[in-house]
Amino acid sequence: ERFGVYEDMSPFLANSLGSEETTLYNMVAAYAMFANGGERVEPTLVDRVQDRYGRTVYRHDPRTCVDCTDPGIPESRGPRIVSDRERVMDAITAYQLTSMMRGVVERGTASNHVKLSVPVAGKTGTTNDARDVWFVGFTSNIVAGCYIGFDQPRSLGRGAYGAGMCGPVFTEYMRKATAKYGGGEFKVPPGGF
Image (tube, rainbow, N blue to C red; front, side, top):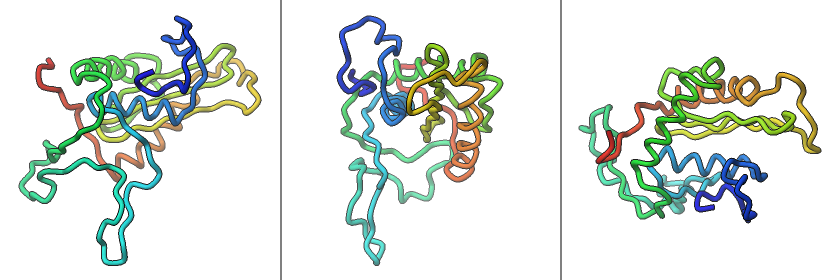
């Protein structure tokens, strides 16, 4: 519930395994919290608005970038950003979960279908009778998801799996996104291993 995956979660143990319905929007927002070290993220379609002189008149993200104007920042280290976002899990736990989801892409169900030039983590999903298939994944700086299913739920057919159907869609999108926005190693938090 703290991740916002479910709007109003019913009190059933199976929900901890993802048995209740949710949206791709909610899933991508939740996975963004793994990617950024455990802070709550509110997705938006508008990042900022500038006037005709290039001055920012609206910015969705209120965080402050302390050294963004410093040209001496090494490429291996991103700028330092001060955040007051709500923490939904500690950074070490987020990193450990990221490491496990990296295994899904490198050695698990997505290993034959998600191939990028930068480190990527994610999770495949296939509902009962393959009525829906999913893949939600992330790099160090981009989160994206794929959902395939019918408006009126029915089976997608034999052989329909999240990795095989959504993996290639995710990969194609992320190849273009990482070509533009880059990506790197997942940041090990202080106290991590």
